[in-house]
Image (cartoon, rainbow, N blue to C red; front, top):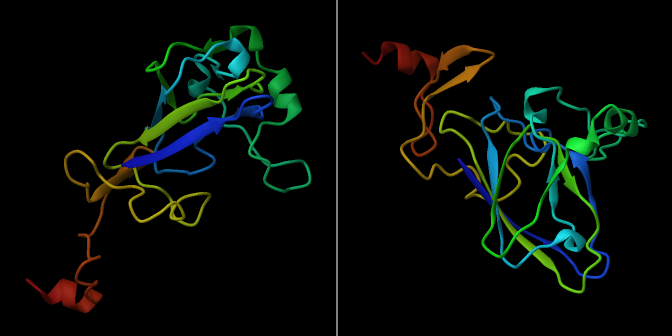
Length: 186
């Protein structure tokens, strides 16, 4: 499955992106989604490059809601304080540099204090049997091409919590039959 967006961090104070994980924004049936970023211009430290915390994708999934229960899209201060931010790796580099991170990796960036914008092309991919859970977060609201299978064919099975679920065929083109029609159509 595939998702594409262009992320601009504007010059002279383009905002920081607080520490977060991506999977909470668009939950899937597994943790295979990964995002590939391509810097479209040279990016140095003052431009607010992405910072990643290596190995954090194997750890805890953090609650990105604020204390008042509203969606914040960022980790809370107590969770951040528990991390070793000295291990953070800042991903700067020349135009064409590629970043890759798993949907569970803790990442973020500081403000852009340079005179140039920081354009970053982000492409998210997942396994063909990794399905977005519709109705949660951005799933289903990012356009009809979101979630398109770009290699191979869509799987009619999904694995959840280690258990494979063989799914019914894709009836999106011709409509679903009744259970009676399915069971008596032999």
